[in-house]
Image (cartoon, rainbow, N blue to C red; front, side):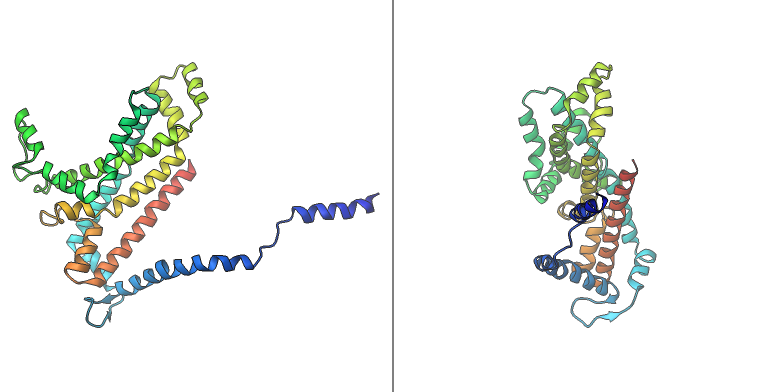
Length: 305
């Protein structure tokens, strides 16, 4: 009896053992691998090589090793200012639009608000128009002479900045960040609205029976149910904050002075205005490293929860 059972057990083990991968399957992946190598890996390698050269885009490249990286952190006050502004922007971009999106999405889904679709359309409207056009509109709003914001402050008897919102070194980054929040919180609201509709309604009923009010349900049901979505949105907003360029380009061009410089705009000026392509490549490599480190840190923190 035992001997008859042995072949049967061998067949079960063989059936449950993982099947061997067919080498022919890798042939179907070769076009994708080729495109990734050609359009991503090879340009990245070229950029890293250029970052270790002194090159103006025309004359022959002169290899200087890590000199560009050292010079960026020691003799470039504009780059130090760009790092500071970018990190502050990332800190705000990964929190303010995310929390605004959470609050508005909870109000739209759980608040029993009438005309929800119209509110969603209004929140999503900034995503429809170009960010450059939005920046030009806000530049007009901030205009110290003809802008509606200044007119409103005058009506209310509130003193407005003498140099304007975009001409004041202490206020320019706040003014630019307001544009960013206006253009992005509708996007986060739509994502959280869709995700909230997938949270089990029985959890809200149970929380209501336990005596949780609207804030308690938001804190103990909505946020735990959106953990994965929150992580994804935070990473997206972080990457978007690191790579912000069009708002600065269309409004201040880094001014006044270099008060509103960010890393992406610094890369642009060094590469296409000053023709220091080695510096621009080094700064872009550092920007990529920053994005990878911050994004990976967010994922690790999320996995520990």
